[in-house]
Length: 311
Ligand code: GLN
Image 1 (cartoon, rainbow, N blue to C red):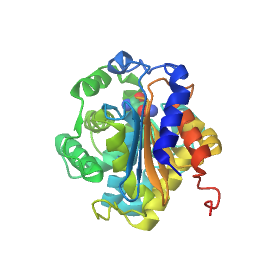
Image 2 (image 1 turned 180 degrees about the horizontal axis):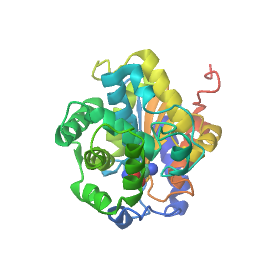
Image 3 (image 1 turned 30 degrees about the vertical axis):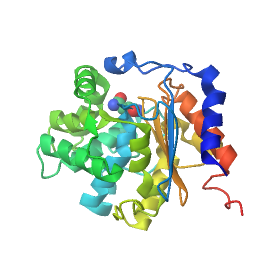
Image 4 (image 1 turned 180 degrees about the vertical axis):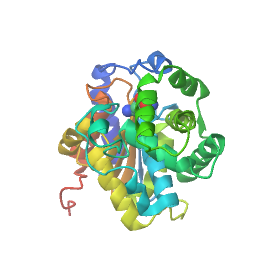
């Protein structure tokens, strides 16, 4: 199987469709991104990299960051993390507030905004917001083995100025006594983690530990136990695309996490880590062309967590 040929074919086949979908414009800074951008990077467990398109151009990873902060929070708090956030698919939009009232301010899962805000609160424990943000950046640099990864301050500022929904979610949780730190501090961490700027290549590298039982095969670092890696993958599969998670599992069949910047990180356990970027979103806020690219990749490679690997 020639992965470079496959990724080149996918890029070529999708060329006429680039620009489809709707770029997130509720964060003003994201509205400026060229909707025709497309990048894809696959890294296998031996470190071979296969690339297409704008895969070395940084973009705003947004909610893909929720995988990294969940991993950090689990490292700090272990299973008690689940006292603060659930593990069930929400079946509602990423920024929905309705479920929170019924469920006394405990978010359904760590990947919807409310859940990620609860996780940011956990990452803040024992830190100032500045320290927590620095810890997140260092962690992602360590995962990707790339010290050049940074936060785009303009995106963080832009979202802080307009993140009224997230303020509503955080204030609502605070009213239920579900956040330990001041709302401004928690959201400061949350907005900055979402503003991490990464290339597809960097993002694929940072997800490699999830494809390899918790250990980055390139650096030799054990990031999490194999059990924890499997569990994070399970959450990505069931909750990583919000109310489009079932559809993503049906069409792609791999754990994945999307962000409104148009990025998706997908994990093919035992095989590879894949990142794709295309800014136009579908109705669920997931990259439209990015999802298609991953579906094509899964079809061509046979990669899936639901079937036995081809002999
Ligand atoms: N920062 C974005 C928000 O809070 C993240 C949402 C997303 O990527 N789905 O709205």
